[in-house]
Image 1 (cartoon, rainbow, N blue to C red):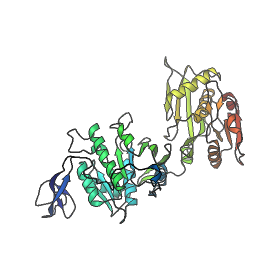
Image 2: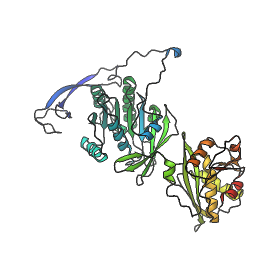
Image 3: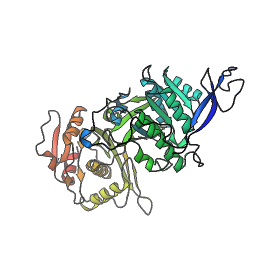
Image 4: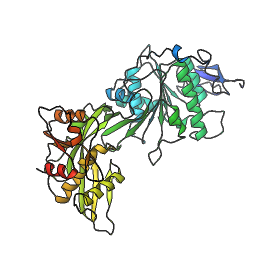
Length: 456
């Protein structure tokens, strides 16, 4: 192992700011004669700063104690849901999303709410100054005496601050701004991101400190940096939604401690991100009831059933090639369903422009939405209104048949709770299904049969 090198810097006893050389006046708080020299251990190996609690020795599987450590509950119930029930000690969570969508806002809110005398939190920011963080905190109406802000981009200095403060939680905003002096490449490069992440993961595991990493995304929407970063962390959470709209969706893409299909729904308000405990009611609150092309489907996001409105608009094309446009749904799936409508159900949509929209900003990728999509397109083509009290559940096969879907009882309970009176489901799901007091369940074997029951 390479030897560690020593260097010194000067720390202000008034505000804690650091400077590489002595000055008569602190450049941060302007206090005179407040700078004191300190030695800093600059490591040339990623493991030099961290001393494992015990030697790395192989253990017998039967001798390992697998008692689950208690999870730390965040203030936000939606955040806890996405994390899998709370924050696991020693876990490393990567939070990604478009600029301005609310990553820093959510983490600052939760860090301020969790901080206490016995649970100090270190917020390392490489993109903003301490004053900018304070301005955001004032805007959100949060204040915390035990939340420490460190504007720093050098990973060695950040690790030394962690060793000095010994926080219960660390937030790094963002991992792309951090760099190690051992590498000559620029911050944000593949080698820098990988090396800095390794150091933070190492200290998280050896000190049992939860670490949140904020990650940038590219213009295509993918997480910036090496793909190995997603493999290294314990959980990957991605923000979805348009930053110009009110609602944000936090989706769990990877989670070693919980479900990988959970979502949390938030509303962006002047006081920050607020929980939306009943997303179905929100997504359906402005649904028109006297128009064609509108249906309601029920999709499963993890363990939560969510009712979503699907809107379709089919018009005669005015160009040589018909357009197919989707928002929140898979374009290839739409093309497949249009083929079923044309071949099996007799709807001539080959010469029509078809536009499909999942209202509310939710991304729907499960086949159970097929029946609602086909019904909404058929309604727009015929310009006939669909019963607004009916919910559609079912996968459509290439032969026009309806195929069974999972968790049908959970979906139906959610529809009944929100006041829907009818539900059209695949015939295969009707076997052994319990009866519902306020919901009429109609089983259909084919998409054609379902359409016959859909029209008022």
